Structure formats: C-alpha cells, structure tokens
Length: 132
Ligand SMILES: [Zn+2]
Image (cartoon, rainbow, N blue to C red; front, side):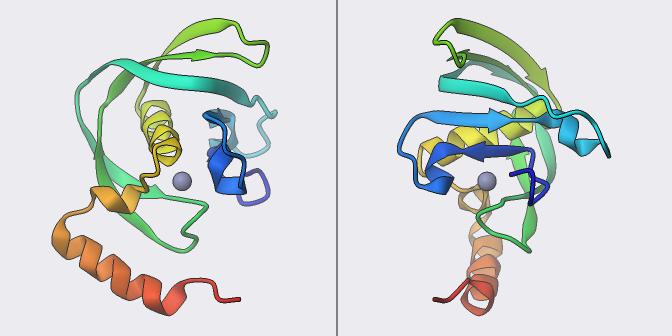
C-alpha cells in the first residue's frame, strides 16, 4: 500500500481472506508519519450526504473514475487487539472506508459506474489488464 502510494488496502486484495482493511489517510500529505488504522469486521452503521469524486484502486492501476459515495459515515469495527471502536469519517476518509468495505464484499469501485462508463472501463481493461 505504501509503495503504491495508496490510502487503504483490504486483506483480500493481497490474498488474505479476512474481513480486515487498513487505512492511512496521512499518506495524502507528503512525508507525513505513517499512522495506519486497522479495521476488523467493519460495518457502516450510519451514513449521510453524498459525494461524487474521482477514485482509483491499487487493484486497477492506471484507471480512475468518479463514484457516488456517502459524504459522512459512522464505522464500527474491532481494532488490532480485538477491542470494539466507532469512528466518524467524512470526505476522503468516508470515501476510503466505503471503498475498502466494498473490497471485503467483493465489490470494486468500477461496479458502481453507469452502464456506459462500465463499458468504457471494460474496453480499457481488456487492453491494460496485467498478463502472466
Ligand atoms: Zn481498491
């Protein structure tokens, strides 16, 4: 995640089948200290507002598109020690949580695109997907 300058990473993106993701919003700023947040069994218990901003994904390098998301979310999860916590996030943080939670549910941000934009994405993907 840090090597690719990502803000978040879900366990299943690296082949670990656990409902865990990490976020480090400090990585938006150059040379900020690393402050990874750990979310185990996360769920969004409340959300409101709407954002429509550009998103990318470490699993689809080189592509980005605008996605509709909740502007504010209240997340409930367990921390690294298994202790429950709740966190309110807005803006970028809210978008990142929804993006990573989607990963845990097998959903990519391109799954939220309109039929036409999804078609354009799939055309792009055919040309750019990594090959073995
Ligand atoms: Zn992603």
